[in-house]
Image (cartoon, rainbow, N blue to C red; front, side):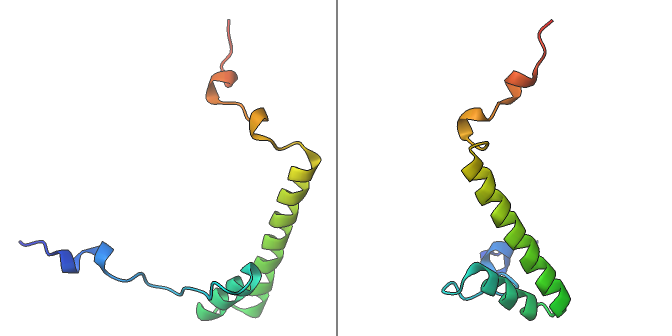
Length: 81
């Protein structure tokens, strides 16, 4: 049983589709969805979810509630008796 570098998984090209990096994010999503033969309704739904998520992140950042200084580590969750 021999192992050859040429037949390893890492040496094979990835399966799938790499979208055009010059396009905007939602256009890239559309390209990939069409390549994978998803329905138009599914593509539209994914785009809407992405828009909502981006809007949520922007609003969260603008509200000031999100800051790395306010993030607690696991040690702060412990109760002291």
